[in-house]
Image (tube, rainbow, N blue to C red):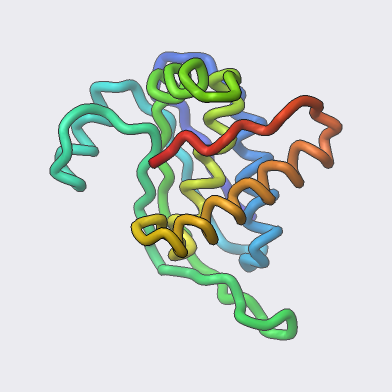
Length: 165
């Protein structure tokens, strides 16, 4: 799996954890090991510009996903997953920090960025949360991936609750 993490935000973030959880999520979703992903960490001004340009919404957001080859997890265990370019995930640590502080189960900026990375990966794989059933599926899968990753690393305490909308 080729995953690039590029921090352009000026904020110190745990880039290794972002890389590790992205790799874990893609493996768990059975994405081809030669697929490529880019994760870009930006400041609020850059995120606001992207949010306005692509979503026509004001202000910065927490995470945005820009799919390339529209890869999807294989339907059956026997199927060979397709290889390709997943796309880009853009994260904003300043928004993540505030969301972590405001969450019902308060958590760190880095924990929120890990959750947002998984959220972005799922969006790249075609998951969405516009409808209640889609939201239940996506957020359930997101929690399972984050919990699995944390469990494998022996991290204690509750996993961050979904704060993305």
